[in-house]
Image 1 (cartoon, rainbow, N blue to C red):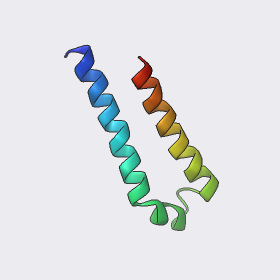
Image 2: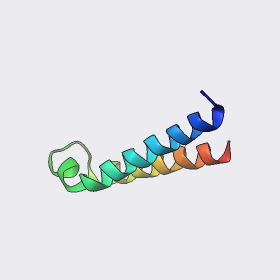
Image 3: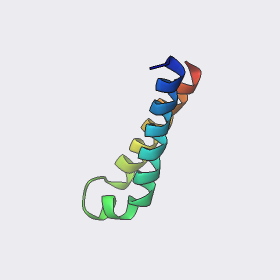
Image 4: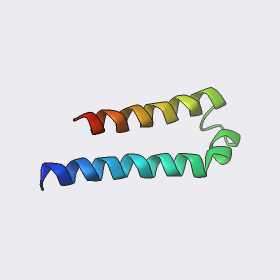
Length: 56
C-alpha cells in the first residue's frame, strides 16, 4: 500500500473515532466510560494524534 494511502487511512480512522466519541459523548459519560475531564483528554489526544499525522 502506498504511504500516502496509509496516512490517509490513519487520518480517516482518527476522524471517525472523533465523530463517534462526540456522537456518544453523553452516553459515554453517563455510563461511566469517561468522566467529563477524561472525555476532554480523550478528545485532545485524538486531535493531537491527528495533527502529528498531518505533520508527517
